[in-house]
Amino acid sequence: MAEAPVDASTLPVTVKKKKSLSIEEKIDIINAVESGKKKAEIAAEYGIKKNSLSSIMKNKDKVLEAFESLRFDPKRKRLRTAFYTDLEEALMRWYRIAQCLNVPVNGPMLRLKANDFAQKLGHNDFKCSNGWLDRFKSRYGLVFRAQPVESTGVSVDPSAVWHQNILPYYLNDYHPKNVFNVKETGLLYRMLPTNTFAFKGETCSIGKLCKDRITLVVGTNMDGSEKLPLLLIGKNRNPHCFRGIKSLPVCYEANKMAWMTADVFEQWMQKLDERFQAQQRRVVIFIESSPAHPEVKNLKSIELAFFPSCLSSKFIAMKQGVIRSLKIKYRHCLIKKFLSSVEGSKEFTFSLLDAVDTLHLCWRAVTQETIVKSYEEAGFKSQRGESEEANAETDTGLDLVADAQAAGVEFPEGLSVEEYAALDDDLETCEPTPSDDAVCPKMSLVCLQSKVP
Image 1 (cartoon, rainbow, N blue to C red):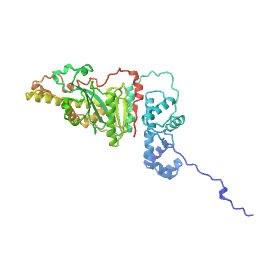
Image 2 (cartoon, one colour):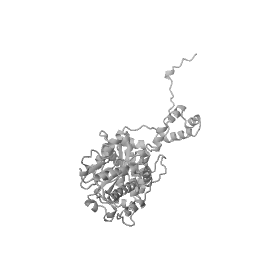
Image 3 (cartoon, rainbow, N blue to C red):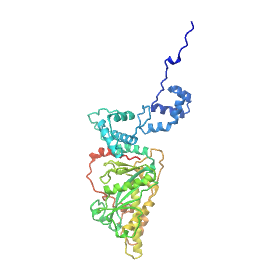
Image 4 (cartoon, one colour):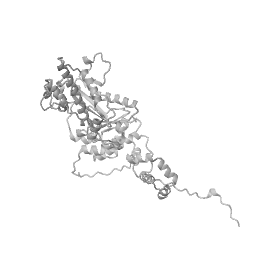
């Protein structure tokens, strides 16, 4: 008897499950393809189809970026990101900083920090539920383990930890042209060599009493291609010498102490943020931890990275040559102005407006090589392989000293122009706060104040 025809619709359908590869395996596949291995052999080895291999190569940049920036667990198989990607990136960076400092982090701490970042980033509808926290931990492969009670007894240098483990995260995320450091310095803008010993080593007392004291804020980017406009803080809001002047070549603020304050800092950051927004740029600005440098909300283009309060000054780029170069040039101009008055038998006058104009010109004259060298001295090494050897400018000022002495100017014996330029470096530039090394780890944990567009 002939068999009845079989209805194909009633047969069980066997569907071969598509193989999922981890990010780590995809990296191996990309390396194999780029090394010249045949794609057919690679596909067979990993049990995938050729079109799947082609898809991996098409998304090569995304896979590499996820792997290199440690945004995902290498064993993770999907690159799907969360809705609050900016929040997650900030939270993950904070978590890794905590790891670097051996600070134990648990679920409640992570939830608290997530809500904190959400508020700062403007995600008012975000709530860190248990479900969101579990998904976040899964996306990044986080596992919280009990911390040992015993102390290892090994002392940790916070500066070294910051430089070796925290700084690279920023340098990996930002191009050198978008990495900035800003620093205040005190300046006695009319100080001549004849009265230097009256100021040597002074910090706050002379600064409070001297009417010629100002605070200067300088900042540049890492590759030396951009200098921020100088911020000058004086004591008089409307100096007599400014009358009739419609605009200044620097940003000018004033308060009774000529100090950086929280209000001045916040207003300045907002102006810089508008500047970078107009340029459609995203930058990071490294700044010292201080009550005068508060968190600034609603920044769109600036991420503030606060140095830990106990960080050695050798890691502050502006202090490794940029400020010194500016002050040496400024003192040169001041002495030349004085010599010109002596030679012309005229009374020497030098107003705050003269100081503003002179500082502006001297700031423009600070070389890119000096800036790059200063960042290198501070340990800012580009993670993108774009750093080149730079030579800082050198200027002993011997000719200027000789000219001054020849004109009868009293220049203390043994005092170089460089030493003369640095005599007001110790002046206070903001309200002094008690130093406390114990707060350093805490300050490091909050050094990320992420503001993304």
